Image (cartoon, rainbow, N blue to C red; front, side, top):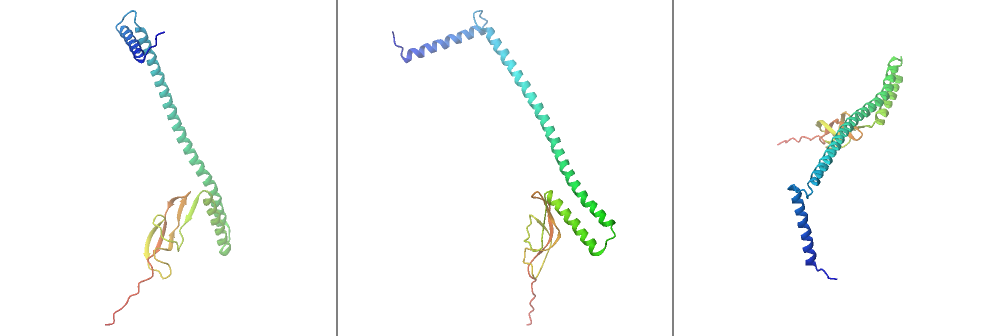
Length: 196
């Protein structure tokens, strides 16, 4: 048995590749012994595959559009549902106000009733994620507070809040209204007079 070396194997592989190329050329030239029908079949198969992929792509795009529409409707429904829960809770406070105004109570009892209603309102708003902030004595923070004015103050250090004109509000951690405050510019400057 004769042993083939690497050169013989390379020569045989090159010869086989040449024969395949000749067969393909013959098919393209319309040689009856060639495989021209195979090329047409291959083209037809690829065209069908391309059409199937295109249909699949169009179906996926349509499904995605439907998904976007459904998601947008669901988001709107969730917002309406959240607003509905908040409004339902607040109607209790409104009813309490109405009862309080219809009552003939005056003075201390009326004030006490209003404080109870106010406390109920605060607890409802807190339950729905509202946080109230802004207190006199706090350090001024331009990200949280709007300074209405600066004024000198004997007791409140510079850069701290003297008075809160309107409270600030956060909804679930996001600022929805800045606190409007009066800020201390420090102790009043004493005027020195020159007697010379």
